[in-house]
Length: 366
Image (cartoon, rainbow, N blue to C red; front, top):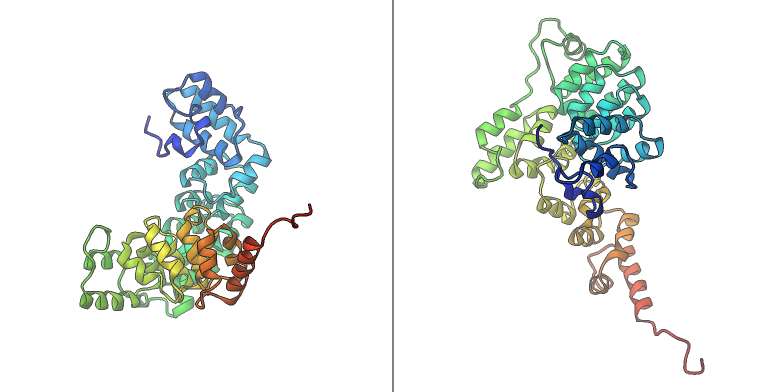
């Protein structure tokens, strides 16, 4: 039995005993039957973790329970973007015949591309259309494209749209007839070679050694060449580089004018807290990037990140106002005097400081 990729510490302390290998079987069995009063995401996580239990009957019971959880639990848990990717992949498998839940899994940005590809192989017209609308996934994962084109239930109009978009973005797979046909539609000619799309992600990684974060930063002259080479890449290859490349690559791609490319970079599983904080401080950061950072509950637990978002004039005022009350008094006082922060933030900070400094009580006669 392979080791579970999740540590019991992802669960609150009082629930860990229900998934730990050293715990009594009866305790693990309670979780496998769904009898432990946890929050929806915690129940889903525990059932996934129990797939790695040493006892086959515990594994089977957890799997059965996962497939029969009530809607109030599943509809909440499967939409939670903080759920572990492999937990979502597990539920995609056990709920393979329940389309409403597959739809939630497909719409969750945390779901692994491999799981989406598996769903796409047999998805209905509606679900195929939902999958086809996630352009970032289509360009990031060749497996999803191939699965859709091999799905006999998907509408031809859906597949034609996917194929045309993929070809225009630099994807060309000669063994996929739908893409060959799309290339003819987009560029004309039955026998013409694919349009030159520039270097591939693999070529850039090899040429500039930007696959590992531990390598030394590029020298200035090499960095200029690096940036120029990236500018010649197709959208699809830039998106692949956002996943395969290191910080050096992500720094360039985060500034890309194409939204799909910059979003691929911010969603890279290798991105660091330091890079996220740098983007939150960046007053020229794309709106979509700042919106994505602001909506990430895990990242916004970081106090410095909240402060940076409040100070950044590119962050929408309602978002900044949401974080402002969570700041410490010295920082709110500083914001009330800072000429470089948005006027709405500065004024609200002043109001908050006036309320804090206003004397309490109604006088000595009471």
